[in-house]
Amino acid sequence: DTAVSQTPKYLVTQMGNDKSIKCEQNLGHDTMYWYKQDSKKFLKIMFSYNNKELIINETVPNRFSPKSPDKAHLNLHINSLELGDSAVYFCASSPHRDGGYTFGSGTRLTVV
Amino acid sequence: GDSVTQMEGPVTLSEEAFLTINCTYTATGYPSLFWYVQYPGEGLQLLLKATKADDKGSNKGFEATYRKETTSFHLEKGSVQVSDSAVYFCALPSGNTPLVFGKGTRLSVIA
Image (cartoon, rainbow over all chains, first blue to last red; front, side, top):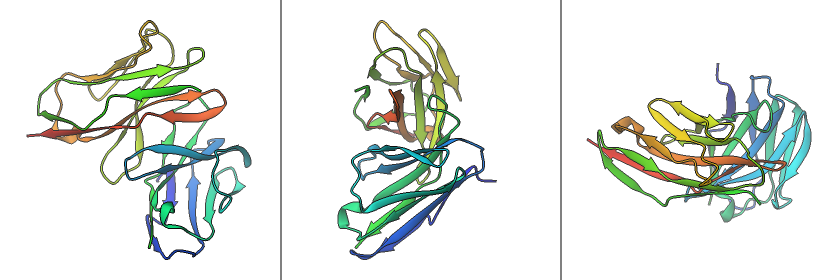
């Protein structure tokens, strides 16, 4: 059983489209995150949810909208995709802030 | 805000060489410190952690000691293998925000 699973693994789409990435964790963790990793491997936090509530939104364009239907799921919807959105997006979860994070295997988004 | 600084890569070593990847941090208080590893095409995995000063985290032959005096958490391994080739990230939680990661250090080990 995969602890943190993301779908799809690869996503190629045209500029201007709207797309979603799904994330589910079966670890019973309270907190979930979305990180963006650029081509130089730099990881930047985008959002953090605790028990379905948004607690962190780090200067992300409002084209990005996270949704947490329950504490096991945190989906990422992106409107009007731009070339600069191309990156690998990682979902992660943790039992608490200082706990070790468990990461999904990533979604490689390519906008053409 | 709190931050970590890692040595620039890439680092290329021969098998069985000694590895050190430097990490220094700036933090208010004494947060837990982490090393994560990302193998090609995969997500990040927790490699080791230390929760207080002078703690040593260890896993898979890797070690790192939380040094308050030098604000460092350097990663070491006595004898690297080709399978250790990956990107290594130092990280710490920053106030109320999630983990802040260093820029990553790519390690390539050649046979």
